[in-house]
Amino acid sequence: MLHDLIKLAYMLFASLGALAFLHVCLKGKELQAVIPQVAIVCAAVLSILVLSPNLILTSVALFFIVPVLCRRPEHLGGMMLISMLLVPEMHTHLTVAGVWLFPWGPSHTIGLGALMMLFVQGKRAKPARLSDIVALLLVAYFVVGQARDTSFTNVLRVTTQQLLDLYLPYYVVTRSLRTESDFRTFIVYLLSAGMVLSALVALESVTGWVVFRETLSRYGLDAQWFRVKWRHGFLRAAGPFLEATAMAFGLSFFAMVAWQFRSFFQNNLSRLAVFGAIFVGVTACQSRNAHLGLAVAIIASEAFRRFAKPATAKALLVFAVMLIAVPTTLFLNESPQTTKTGSDTEDTAAYRVRLFHRGLEEIAKHPLIGTNQDEFTSHMEDMRQGERIIDFVNSYIYVALVSGVIGLVMFIGALAAIPVIAVRFATRVRTPQMHEAMGYYFAMALAVLQMLLFTFFGGRNSFITEMTIATVIYAGKLNLGAGAALPRPARPRGSLAAMLRGPDPNWRRSAGD
Image (tube, rainbow, N blue to C red; front, side, top):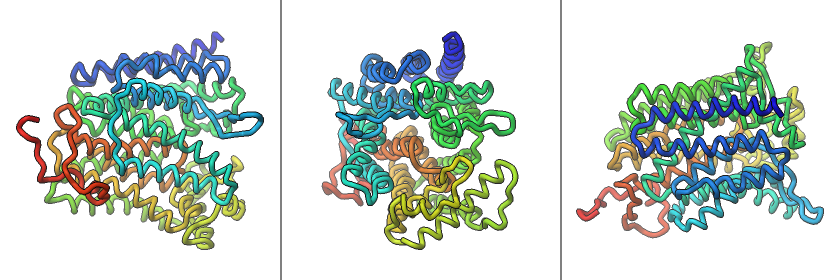
């Protein structure tokens, strides 16, 4: 117990110190006032995880985190998000009368508590239909991938699980974004999540303390110790995520928040200091993919800031295609025969190349609509690596295997639509903050398109990506006006093309607004 208290003290010192540093760097009392609330939530969640003796007490305590600590509606989505990210990915089987229903974890408990609070407060944003459709399509993609060609009861089980994993947090976050002030508060929570997670993974990398996996073991759950790896004398820190690559994937989103939202900081030096602090966490994960993704995102962000104008919008989109095409072309030119092996880094790169070519062979057997997971994995037994798993570190190969070329085109199209939407909104904005928001979505969408070439799109990777997809349309709907959600311009009801076009350029606020 004393050992756990010492580790908790170090974790609280690192996370609260990171939040104190962020507090100093933020500009204005409105933004700084969010940090104390974040600190209370982080301290409560970490204390529950380390000190709770079993999963039942942990779940009960986490259910009341948001209802007890959330005093203002604008904190709801951000508070739920950071609480979920601090909880390790642990699931137990929920059974009723001996019948297994679906996996259940503390993150679901946090989501239900936040959903209850959303309805209790009674202040919800109006839905953006296109955003809801995209979120439900993402849920459908995972249902098809995991439950294809199985029983109806298993389809219901997987559907329920994906709705809890993805749509529930999406619903709470988007329905809590009602005004520009709500959106600013949510951005501060994203910055806070990046700072806290970065501090924790840096601590984990230096000390070798895998506290979150120890929590899983204490609860009698599978801690997946085979994922604990060292490289160059340092632990590849994963924090509350299952593995280091996913952790780095998530931190790259938060690092780009610091890079892009310049108006949130005291000065440029403060912004770069916060970005650097989060980048330390990315480096602690030792993921080359996240570093490459950040490089793509930064280049895209700077291009967007300078060229997201009506006269150069098309050229900016052409540049975006070229930016993604360069690393993709370099990867596609590799072959299993020419890839070096030997070191851990070289073996990982060689496995990715082999997976790509073996995946193409299996895709050719069912090119249009793919096949179920059991079938194609049975044909790829030669791809099982030292951990005795087939590690689908190429999301596009996996999508094409389960849904064929048709599903792959839809998947890429959904992600590629985000930069187009962002550019169209940005050419008609009225405030600098709106331009920053659209630049963030533009940059991260391109980074995700690149990073998915080298990682699996599942678990918390899909969760964090969905938050980006969700808020891009809500930011456009709010249009970050003068502190309140703006009325929609008149346009044909249900027109998808009209929603993609963004705000009506002929619409202006009246003098009384």
